[in-house]
Amino acid sequence: MKLHFFSFLLPMLLLNFFAEAARLKDIASIRGVRENQLIGYGIVVGLKGTGDGKNEFTSKSMARLLDKLGVKLDSAEVQSKNVAAVVVTATLPAFAKAGNPLDITVSAIGDSGSLQGGTLLQTPLRAGNEQVFAVAQGTVVISGDGGKDVHTTSGRIPNGAIIEKDVQSDFSSRKMFRLTLHNPDFTTAARSVLTINRELGGQYASAKDAGTIDIVTPFGYENKGVELLATIESIQINPDSRAVVIINEKSGTVVIGDKVKISKVAVSHNGISVKVGDSKGKGKGGDEKIALIEGASVGDLVQNLNKVGITPKDLITLLQAIKAAGALHGELEVL
Image 1 (cartoon, one colour):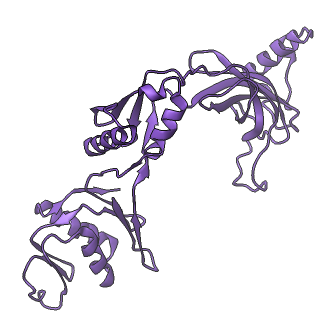
Image 2 (cartoon, rainbow, N blue to C red):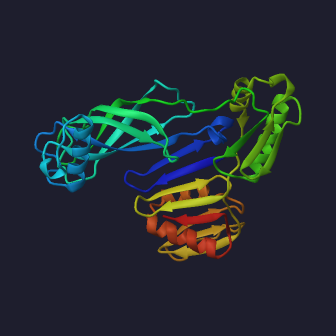
Image 3 (cartoon, rainbow, N blue to C red):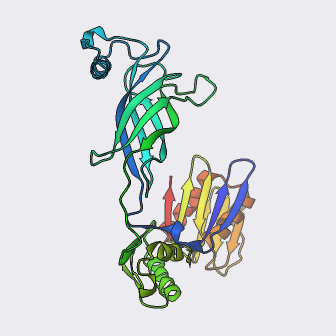
């Protein structure tokens, strides 16, 4: 697939991207190999008067924490501007193992003015099934130079959590694997099946629909699921794509797939005449004349229009008119 990017911001810019064959690992994912989101509720202490103050849930949380540490206090007695309630989030990678570190993000949920310099106290992080997979603790780091645009109520703690539980997955002995295409397409799925079977030397892959490919483990790869997936991931596929033109009117950028063609049509707008077909006649009056052969691509048209200094608004109007006439063979999307 080839994409053309046209920008009408001054100075005018024209870039061509030729998308060659892609590795299967870059256009598909393996079912069961995925990240998981973790979340937890915690307390940040050590703030310099920028904490939550009199927030009830912060006071209750601190009272419960102190109670576990052997200090008996009523929540009404626990009010401090040096403490803030936070939500802690992290992403648990596939095949994560106990003992591995995780980066975490800490975000204030009360009226704290800043988490700068604070320390997150031990916080369990749970997955969607409520199981604890990691525990977080550490000093909050606020990125930036302290300017007014820096969000000081959210920060990160590099390696701030430790994974407590292995993510269970046994790929080595699987009898079947399922691939899911990132952009479902019947042609791409069919090409992938043919290429995988040719690489493995048999009929092991089959497409269930436009986005799903099942692969039966060959005899030679029994109990070698990792090696099989490594082989499949590196297979080169030429993904297909739909014919589409995407226009961003605000930025003046046009993205065009190489499959978008134009049949015979003639249209005139705002001093510009476009004619696609055999005729090489002149435009009306002093119109700028754009003449292309039948079957020309939208990329050819936009290149010619770019030369005469067309504005993004006029370009959108012309393309919409050509599409309305049934001469633009593809989808037209205006952002």
